[in-house]
Image (cartoon, rainbow, N blue to C red; front, side, top):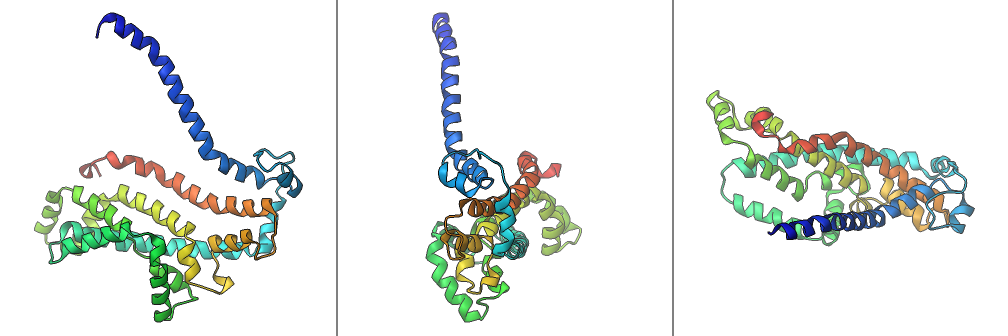
Length: 284
């Protein structure tokens, strides 16, 4: 490149960079605007929400919508969501990591077919599996129970895939040293490989908690009793008007904001661990 061309490129770069930043800012605003509208409307009065539906800033900040949540069985929904999310997250951490390790390290007949089946399940839309899940839950006699909400979600194909890929990146020489010391397969998995998989486990924790906390369709088909409603199904009934909320937009969006807070907390707590995925297994 000639000096003149370099000077021209240098003069154009600031404009190009500014254009890229402006485009990024526009798309970021379009992405976060619905959340800002949700957050602002939750602190509005009913009159303000109806009169200024697209303005995210309330004229008068009030918290009456949040105080009304207690009249909508919100504490029960929250408790059920915590129970389901905690048990599902723990179950996926255990079962997904065990399955991922078995596919990555153990040599057994049909291993390739099992992994291909897992990949195939990942490609199937979740809504297609709702009716088979419902039939299995009814057949097992766990419909309208906590086990019916939890057991079908205890393992997922995505988590198995993530753990398998991570375990394959762990140097096999470390496990060989443990074998020489007389450690068995489970002891190697639990004491050697699993501690090295901390970044993958953190990512799996966030994905599992977020997925189970926000799950609507799987929870909906597993129960009928309102006492087993989680936040997703409970707020769904609230938004649809089944609980008599009508057009109370601040109340509905206050429930949505309250649903978002636990997931945001989990993400911000664990995100620093995810950012360390570049650390090698030997450094752990």
